[in-house]
Amino acid sequence: MLRQVRNMHVKAIKMRWLTGGDNYSYLLSTQDKTKSWLIDPAEVLEVLPNLDSSERKSIQFIANTHHHYDHAGGNTGILAALGKENIKPRVLAGSHVSPATTDVPEHQQQFTLGNLLVSCIRTPCHTQDSVCYHVKDPETSEQALFSGDTLFTAGCGRFFEGNAQEMDVALNQRILQEVGEPNWSLTRVYPGHEYTKGNAKFVRKAIYVNPNENKHFDNLEKFSLENDVTTGRFTLADETQFNPFMRLDDPIVRKAIGDANGSWTRVQVMDKLRKLKNIM
Image (cartoon, rainbow, N blue to C red):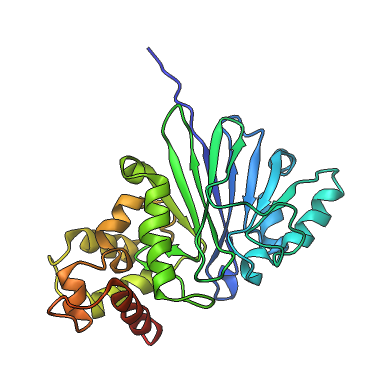
């Protein structure tokens, strides 16, 4: 007997890749593709040609993960282009610094997208208006996390407007708690940039220097070397196993950054990790 399984759809759209960039925009759609959110469409001329007429008509929200131009810089242009087709989505962002913002969510505020439930997780650090979007189909338990420049595969964003304590809270409290441990392995991570190769290179050089110290990381490294696109391939549970910024109490991580005795605070570990990554 055939059984139809309902799935959400995530369409990753590359931006700036032909000019040395590595950004992603995403079209998140319901199973029937009649309703969608367009996430971080920074480059109008790269995003719109990747959306057909029905996809454009389905857009209910433009959602920004933060206000930086390479994520929110296309809002006005996208709105203008869609407006010519009488498509008028709202703009969801962490602050009105993002152009044309109509809705600023509270932490844990929820929205519905057809059958999907979207939770807004405010994660101030990279910017103070950073928001991650956790999406769940309540019936199938299929889930996704659009993490902007807060969480990358095997990495995290720079602390442009925040500090190590805020990033520890963002990654290891707010995201993990809001998603909930039973859902970590069901939640695929969609970051704002394709940074996996560089992150893996840093982790291998500075943290898990020897093979077999962390088999989860070994598998990630192998995948990253064989694939240019890694977004959506790893789950939040995977991140807790190989991402050093989410493994602040791992003795190997601590020893690698100079805390062999394990006496540093988590904030000190996070701060040192980020400083090391910044110079590599």
